[in-house]
Length: 247
View: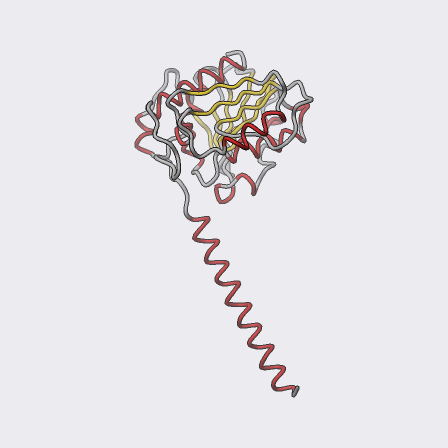
């Protein structure tokens, strides 16, 4: 084969690879840019007693720090959900005296920053007991982080989520909450992964609740039809979590 022909084929290959890369890049941009936005109107209407003023750090992390709080909760948002959709749940929990830290994930996917909780606890030395958890994909990734930092936490809270990490031989307090009408969470995998939790784990099923109603971001594709209101599910969830961790 002549040098000219080889160069021509090489140039065509470079162009083809460039087009493939461009196509994949466009697909990624479209996919990552398609996410559930926080329902700001619903969030504004939602209110709890003793609202705690929140702080925002440079990386987008939101913090609620009640006076004399001794228990902290780090929360990972659900996949492709704007993290501010969980402000109502954090408001409700902080009103019960729990320090809450809501992290913002890159591209709204916790898989891109499983270690988002790293360094948070050191900023609040007054907190004696720490819990970590999250919604859906966020819950699974929180469990993954926890599995490598067992001694730093007292427990795990899963909302419409399950752990793929084996925590069965730990003394962690684990709370699993999901809605009876949740059609997004894979129930088969949920049941299979129960054995990876401590035998003392507590399971709460919210009657009439759905997958999306742990946050406020509207309806989620593939979810069931809830028979309770969004704010009702959030209040029930906050009360259940507070009861579990002793508040």
